[in-house]
Length: 316
Image 1 (cartoon, rainbow, N blue to C red):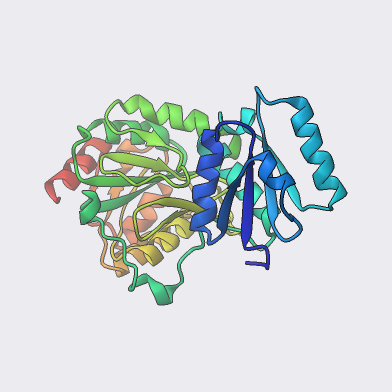
Image 2 (image 1 turned 120 degrees about the horizontal axis):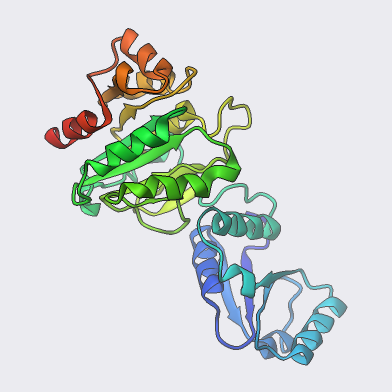
């Protein structure tokens, strides 16, 4: 973090929901957050603090103009945030907004929150049992995956102490379309990870294309930059390695898909003590990923999506 370790949030009227959310994320990133009204800013020196001026509807234009003129005259370091827009942001767009603002505050802020290093993982191990979660399963899929995943998720009733992380090959413009399609299962809610939310049992997280997932030691969700050299979006192998770094044990279900992305991830999960299962060839649209995992003898169960779900429930 740079010398600007204090951030002032300037509020016109009531503090807006998105700005309160921003304050929480700034504090988690290690900043000292100061909430200010325009009169507070006009009455003190502001050359040693980064200011986020939150412009929203119902404010007095003259009051805003007076404040901005004052800040410009004093060469204040400011960022303008339109809360009319930020209040409406959800999912990946909200994550992007947070990361964009943090990067403006300090260009060294490439991720939020910071990913824990291997030296601190054991000291801050995520306690899944305290969150009501017994096991986490990565669901890896590519071509033909969405149909298989819907069948699979539909076989649960939502009360199981499981968290699913879906890594489905797709382009960024299809993320929310994929989220809607997978939610047709009607049993397990599927959502793009939202910074600051807690992981929950009986839910599924859809891995975004332009971010990688971070699960903090307290169970809160964060995101970080992805590997720019990856060959697929999102990358199953990278997702597996990221999750293994954060968790003692991780399991993996390999669904319909082409190419070999996911094979290395399956090997790493197996060698880390996790369970790997595969979708049967006859029930896949394309069975390339699952077939390679089977040939390497890393699959501990093979079946159609419904049978895969049954196997997981029986081995809770």
